Length: 455
Ligand code: SAH
Image (cartoon, rainbow, N blue to C red):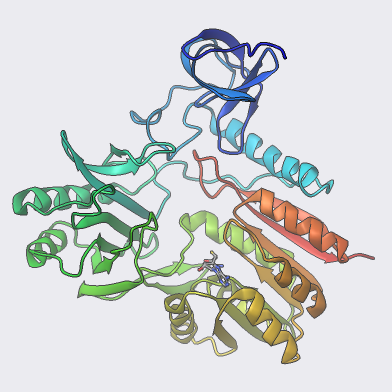
């Protein structure tokens, strides 16, 4: 067997020739793939090897010998440590082109489908676009850290004013920090499973400016809560809801099942595509408001709805996609597994005076099967599943329901391509795909695609 060409702590010269789906640069050395985070295609670097595995190695930049054309100086101090962003070191246009290519590659390599994605819909804002953040709170010898987990780790990087979040999130974290220190509030320790405060979860409605604050705790009671509430509402007059989420589970799932309002409303309200939406802490809500509107507009264009249509909105969250299209169709039916989100969806229909919407709480594959057996024949089906995509049984049921058009909204091109390949075998063909940059500066990319029956 040939000798493995790399050793730990070795310095090598390498050219970056590709980017992984997680956003790491990759080059090759004597046939071995070397992954180097925070690099761009075209960079020639002196690389310090930090880990060697059988088929690959991981390195870090020691020095940049030749910078790629796309390279810029990152505008964030913690970019290299924090696991949140992947592309702060390159021009936004290069990032977008790379994301579009990734969608094309996924269709080609995973789905064996030859499709040319449309131009990616770029984000107007590349900073401060997120309307939601969940900050872990931990403590160590240096004191309290509030921020983000380092890449592939459970170490918290202290970062109060993340460039992806609205400014006032930093102010809210500052208020928590003071309150924790003044009252000796304990913070969660993942090893001992002890300590009270686990996460600070904040959401902001960009259209209405309303803010929701939620303390995620490993316990049942928040001591000195009145003091916290008074500071929060005194210093941030757009906070309308303060809740406590109880999470006593020994897992890395951030939110527990129980939320309790300790001040103000149980929800915040926003406006999305002209629809007033009420969002409670446990409901999913698109994190980039402006891009979500463009995504829904594209989905509506692909859906090509008409007045007599029945629209089935699977994985509907708080009902937002379907409700934004309710005036174009006869009937919408939404399906979602989280009960609180379904409650929000029903209220969202009501407060917008929408009377042609029905919402069902359940597992999408099971609910679709029930609807099919009830004789429902949707003209258009929209699916918007989590990253893992659709279960094969659901794809079967969709095909059996035989919609004119299937619009697939996806946050993972790989599972999208996999599911499109299954649907292709069953007679549905991809007609158009548009990537949408919902998450600038991170490695994630959203997509919407439309499929119709062959022939
Ligand atoms: N379409 C919505 C939500 C998309 S996110 C929007 O645009 O806002 C995906 C949603 O699928 C989440 O609300 C999640 O709770 C829901 N979900 C996850 N697994 C599910 C399942 N098996 N059945 C139904 N809904 C599910």
